[in-house]
Amino acid sequence: MKLLRDFLHLFFPKTCTTCNTQLLESEKIICTLCRHDLPIICYKSYKDNKITRVFYGRIPIEKAISFLFYRKEGKTKKIIHALKYKGQQNIGALIGNWFGHVLKESKEFDHIDCIVPVPLHPKKQRKRGYNQLTTFGLSLSKQLQKPYLENILMRSSTSKTQTFKERFERFSKTSTKFNVPNTSTIQNKHILLIDDVITTGATLEACSKELLTIENVKISIVTIAYTE
Ligand SMILES: [Zn+2]
Image (cartoon, rainbow, N blue to C red):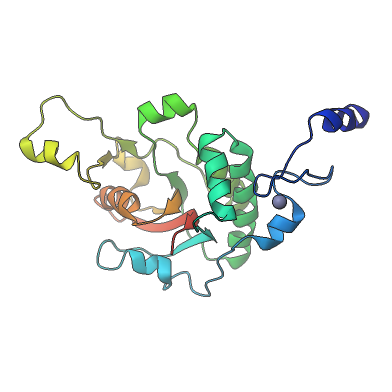
């Protein structure tokens, strides 16, 4: 097998997702140099930091943390791009295992009950063929030993009869609506809501608002990246 792998490697060399140099046989997805050079976020507090402050005055959040800073033309952008648009779902698993291990060691999320992803619009998911959060979420789930529940949040489909206000809202950025079809599953639960990148926090806010209408629900947030 190894011989075959080396042979294939010779003709189809695998390259690093972030710098495009050829990977060594022992390296996977991201080369060693890039791994050491990733802009990893090291906030001391998970309760009060720049990310939790994004949601101040908007929604109550227990804790929030992201793995990487997202910068223009940076390595994180390449990682997210490959995960979302190039079908490289193994990146989600790599980051999920790596970050999941860090979170497990921190013991900060020992008390969460389940992990819930921000849902993609069904049309988008059909086109892409996958939700970019699945491999990330499943790897976090494995590390934190908490269930990954993919069908808790749904994007509301746009109804045919819309009021003027709704039609207007479709064109503003905060128009996305979410719903929870089966509320009893998450009553009294502390939910770890996950997404790829936090920018304005609008999507996570909309999801949280919906989840917080359910009895005794608490929300914490984890994302792959955060735009400062
Ligand atoms: Zn590299």
